[in-house]
Image (cartoon, helix red, strand yellow):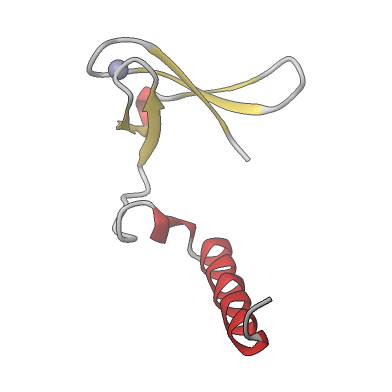
Length: 85
Ligand SMILES: [Zn+2]
């Protein structure tokens, strides 16, 4: 089963990164220097992330009342949707 002490340390590290994600979610998205007026979405047609200005993204709600973002890919024009937590 391995060394118990090492397992504990691994778990502690996982716990730490959990807190980083909780407290600094922007740290995961490009070094924490993300501008707040840019929204990052994933284009399925380009298969890459695109950054959109907030004004180009429309906020909508699904039939189930779930908030979502809708936008057009600036590169290929495909529709993109993204669910908001
Ligand atoms: Zn695209």
